[in-house]
Length: 194
Length: 251
Image 1 (spheres, rainbow over the protein chains, first blue to last red):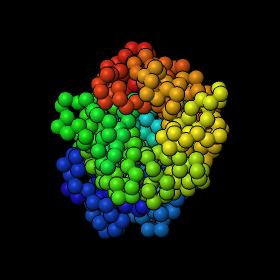
Image 2: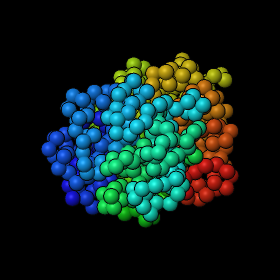
Image 3: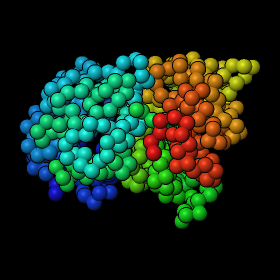
Image 4: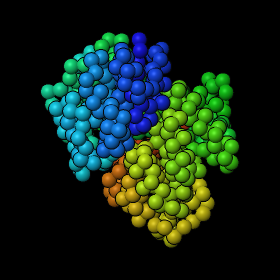
């Protein structure tokens, strides 16, 4: 199985690579269009600020390539947010895969949300074998609201999408690579079940 | 529901853990990677590595250590100690650190916080503040709490937040090492003042101290070193007791 982590200069991808290696698979980092298109599984990571990450995607032309991919794609954290229609962060236009606008958490909660929260209402094989209310690790200031595309939700002052799915596109707001055994299982599901 | 975090802290020098560690099942008590893996398995929510090496050469050892920790553990970790530039942070994050913590360098040049936030995002920039009460006022201290400044803790915390830091790690030098509990009054005031998470540090000696700091101290996370290293409190026991007190924790 050929696993490609999209390398566009946004964020800590070493941890994802290591997490995949712990599952017994090898992932390559790449920004090469052909290599990404020919992969069996594609991981779209991202941390940092939305508009600058989107600018990097556009500069490499990957903004046109990603929405056309046919194999399973998993967006993580900012990667998931960039797969949405837009983000309030830096008034960023997203890849428009998920029909959702990402907005900032209200001031009634501490922002960013940092730490372990629970996921519930789990749908999709991405969560096969994962018990309801399992703990996952998140770090984020912006969130995707609930939507028919939501496949896991979580609560932080309000209910929001912890994971999204549309066709072959999956997105998780949390960091599976940092979410202990639960996170490993979710990554494993993406690699072996989906 | 977002849970309260329990964070063991490991002091590192030249790539090795410094304080004696009382783990009988460790093959090598000085190996931070092995210790980190044990803490991750025992239910730690996060780890902090505090590097106290002095020289540039030893810093390379730190970057290598970060790489091996990231390779091994599946929970987040923060690296701090002597970080003073964008380049320092870049190397540590590229090697797999999730967050970095800066302290004296931010006090000396507060713009560093803005520069780091602009390049790497708020989510990975922790500002550590060491403070001590002088004549009833909390004053920021530098160099591991040795050098006093005229800077007020609360004014500095507010500035740190405004400059974009994602989190504050507050250590009370008055409480550190006493095992008499955290500085809950100051912590609660800090937590009310800023709208970013606050990590309590200094003074952990008993389970009740954690309960207190999460309730009276309004802390979002609590950090401790020796009580975990010497197994005075097992993380799993601590979490079970906190849960019994109605405090949300990841079990």
